[in-house]
Length: 272
Length: 280
Image (cartoon, rainbow over all chains, first blue to last red; front, side):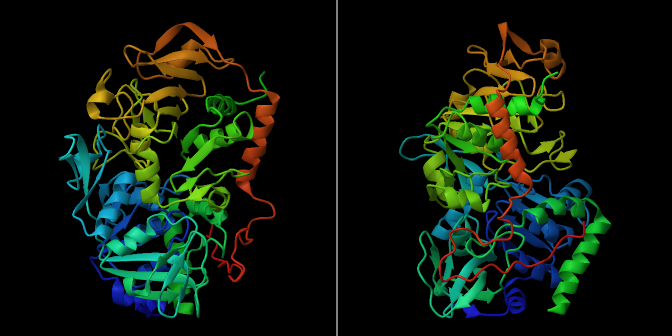
């Protein structure tokens, strides 16, 4: 049964310096509040994993939490580039950032293998691209039945996966629905998991298309209303597109970024 | 002087290529704009597939991102990301892949990863592959939409993120890529198609007002030009008005911003948006 914890305790207990950490969410249900708590607790040397590192990863990278990034697409969706990510890769600010780069299909299948307890997954992808030259976690493999050469991708097993969901009950059973991305696979692939939810309820009402993560498959649940903002939680909030547009200007300049971080993350944490 | 821009012409030309009733894997940006224009004009039954897992999305405004709530709200089905790639894209169920790129070469290979020869110390770090490698590999055909310039149309891409025709004829087959590869490249100047024998992208059509000299000057290799070289039709008044109305929706959604989404379960509370506005 998952423990119900305050967010700060969940992060303190489950996210450690040097960990492989996945904060998943595919535009929808991105665990921003948990990411900010990781920044406030000044975690260092993290390997950050995520299919679509977007603004919260820009913030984590700019805040100096990351040593390495495993990903398939890093940008501000619909807006442009991630400037803190770019600054780290192109100018090693605030420190160097090592990259392990995949395609979406590769990353998704790496989580599937991790969740399935298998050492690798197979897909018909990567062939002819330059991606396999830069990671040992992508290798050609011959099909034992047809002889066709396919691509094997190594299982991804994060130390801890953090996701946001709509709600949970007091036993820590989690409901999430809408665009469910790769969250279920990322939670099941991880050794530990923290789920932040919009609300904790006495009883979960079934919702069409929902994904349920049973409480016994989740380590901890924290109630964090609005914890996905500026991302959104279907049924609870809409995406704050203005924030994503405004982030471009905030993140372009190191000092502006630091001032934003201080005001909206570090000091916001002290106040609450 | 024409009352439309080169970008509008490019978007209209791309939309016209999408046939009604086909399934199209759509990236955000120009591909999404063109696909939604097609659905709002000549192709009402175009099936839009977004990599966030939204199959058959029918948005009435342009989504800002591939995971915009309006895509899930209006989709025939919302599936997980492993499912969209493994069950829907990989087996060849999607007719057209619609891609953009930062660099493209004469064989339609695409780069969205890094600009510069040194991967570890790139001149420009781009967003990366996303779904593009498998879209380029597995869709029945690929349509590329990209503005034409020497910076973009390069002799050799710095990084092969997504394969077009590789190094030439037979390469796709040798690599085991099952989709047909790039059928068209649509730019702000005209349309390029692969030569049936050499696979090399060839300028086959100009947009009204553009010249072959302009196209050749904006290409970083010795651009082949078809004979005869045709000129496409300008945007119609209807295409322009629908496109402009769609684009007007991207900078604000009157009556929707801040409101809960339409499918809120009856027992769920209303949204509690957190007011954390960037210091812009």
